[in-house]
Amino acid sequence: MDLIDNLIKEGWLKTPQIIEAFRKIKRADFMPENMKDLAEVDEAMPIGQGQTISQPKVVAFMLELLEPKAGEKILDVGSGSGWTSALLSEIVGDKGRVVSLELIPELKEFGEKNAAKYGFVEKGTAQFICCDGSKGYEEESPFDKILASAAARRVPEAWKKQLKVGGRIVAPINSSIWLFVKKSENEMEEKEYPGFIFVPLIEE
Image (cartoon, rainbow, N blue to C red; front, side, top):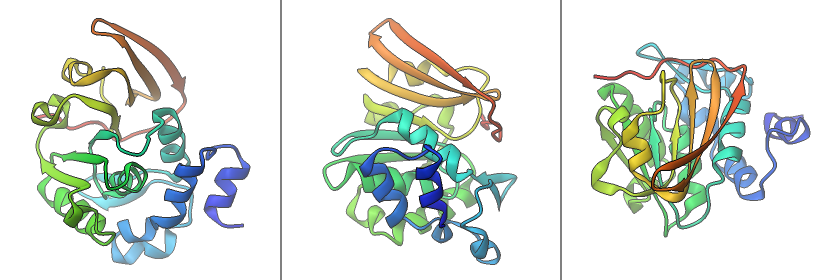
């Protein structure tokens, strides 16, 4: 049974659009040459610069919590290999937009090159920017959703400000995944899902 069928069977992948994106966007296309044969292994893998491409079941879990939809504008913080950006770009489609932030220049280029294999960069669906993701990206805000792939100690105020009311943030904090739903300008509903491991979010 392949990785994706397994993730469906174990209940990590549920939403048709997310499943379709997982089938179309091949994880191997986002891994270093010498590791492509490990793409079907459900583990985080090193991609250089002390960073990893996330474990597939964790990405599936986070995207299911995020609930990305066609036409949305999504901020992807710590884009790394570009895999989550490409999955999100596939889901939001031509009318949507994914802004991907990565602090390490070599990784920003690696992720951008990988996502470009699917035409997302050329079409303008995905834009990769080298900057400190903890500050969000004011120029393009507000966002419908914000996804972070590296663990912060807390969710930056900038992200909360740059989120639309009704929007969702899915982010690792220490060793839990948190879901924040913006109920009003000043009110965030939050829920914790413990038991995960992430590389730390690098801030300038």
